[in-house]
Image 1 (tube, rainbow, N blue to C red):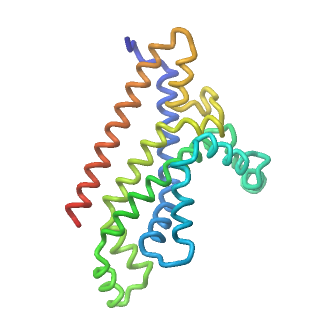
Image 2 (image 1 turned 135 degrees about the vertical axis):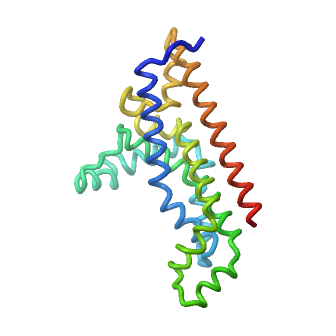
Image 3 (image 1 turned 90 degrees about the horizontal axis):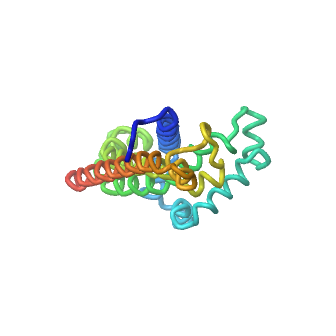
Length: 229
């Protein structure tokens, strides 16, 4: 049923892993800042920020992809500026696939990190401040190390989401072989091709295995947070 792996299959998996890794690492700093703001911040508009962060989870992915295309396309305000100033192009490139995957996985990462930060004992942060540490130094040496299992859990979830992202990606960067055809897009493409069952089964089985492993890893890290709490 599965047959030997082909060079095309290997290229699809390699591109998917590259997109997922870059999407996860690129979103991580912003996710940590957003999680800190939601967990420790007390400011007007906090609930609105929370709603905006989680919006990609409830919006149709096609809508998210369309918004990305309008903003980061070559004629979009952000995309045109980035291309002219830095030569960075997102639309119909693998970089755009990474951006779409990062946006879709961002809420999952923020939620996991936020929960971990909320479980950090604030008395430890107060003790650090009483010893003369500034707020950012306290975050760096106390809060984030204690929240590390949650950070890793969020990264795992975002990575798994990036591997399986479909709707926003195909809307934003299309399904271009060798450029934007990630695992999910390749599976969809092979459902439309006569005789594509062999490739379909191989890639679908790999996708299921990776997603299952990611969920198990995330659950293990979440349990570690509970034990630490």
